[in-house]
Image (cartoon, rainbow, N blue to C red; front, side, top):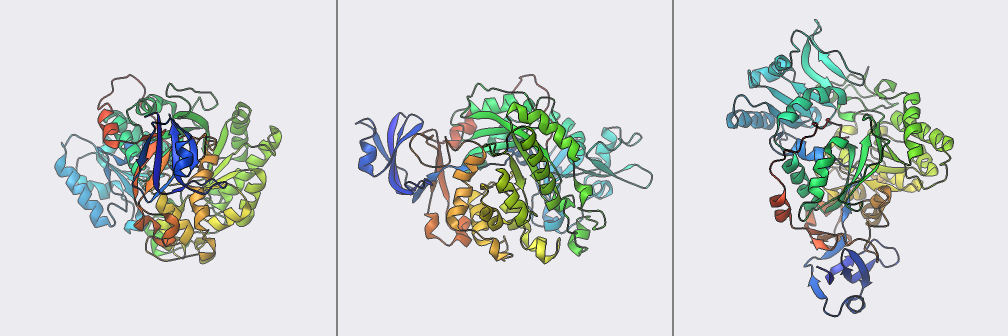
Length: 567
């Protein structure tokens, strides 16, 4: 397609100069006119086709500023089986998935399951003896949905030779142990997940189809641009292959993990900067709320829920959950900042946010970046204070929040995990918006399903999945919520000159919606409005063609990718 005009019931542009239009004119991959049908007709070739999208509303494609699309595919697509709470709500449902997998696979095949959640599934994390009772001599591994925990049986311990020689705890992670020092089948944090999973992933079929499956899931949710916030260069070939595949549905921006040897080095891709680019460097200043490793100044509660999740209030949270010292962060920043990389720190608890802000402020001063448009980032900020949001805004730091944390776990956060004062305001979106910082929203897939409409619904209504409301004063206006998933998310990716609004000169990336989001109750937006399809670069995405064109095998020699953390 070269020149054409796209119409819909309404075009919602997210461009303040012209918020609504009737049509969009496209030439090649770019928008050349936005306005009335007559205005658009005059902007393109006389024989340009007028296409009715058949949608009630056409918006700029949704932007995922914090995701893990390739790892998301590996963890959520076969051969790894899903036991996430939205697939298997109870432990009985989880065991049913286990049983079906045992019956359907060869006994020599290791079984891997993703998505266990002690809090939502109301069951303690399994140990090796628990899994042995289910799997016998089958090798079985269960990944925690937080991506900060992993559980495995005796068969895996024996397969790795760990029965007689249990490994020491790696830096930044630890194994659960029996009184005699042997492994009990539990492990926590990224280094342990990597040690357990990397050999298993190396035995799995080519991950390309898995990655493509998650690309398609994101597209069905309305995303046209995403990011990989734990990029490892060993997956570069896979990203290149997907970007070159017919009707690829996603543009991808990469933040390389600071744990690699190459995080300060530039990288270019044959797909071109508009489809695939390395953007920055990623670090984790703390862990996850759901396993007790978010660094909070306020305590975890001693409740049935936290006891079930194995969270000990005497040791959970606090400074012991910080993953880096300030000097370690300074060293990384002093390598990355002169190279011009955009920094991103995962920080859930307020102590982790404070550490990130302290390190950022000092590094910005050291490198002459104070007051510049650096767009360094902090991710999640569930327990951040208003003062910290104000400080982020003053420093020019963008904040990307995780509505799914509140949507799925909000009823537990308020009173079962933390006290009301802190738990009710988890994910303080209104505070972030009022600070003046650039606020974006994300799904952090695969930690939550791709669902930008539910993200928007959640921050506009403060309604949890169960329909309850906590911290109602942290709700924000619907228009700001949509901006956080479009133009503000694009700004956070430094892509707002290309995407995020339907504006002349930008790429023709759109999402078709079955309803006008401004005409429905924000509290039910994700339930009443559907995504009908997406457009990338002036072409309507054909997911059937994309999935059919992805190679089902790949013999290109390359190392197995390291397993990075999600959230």
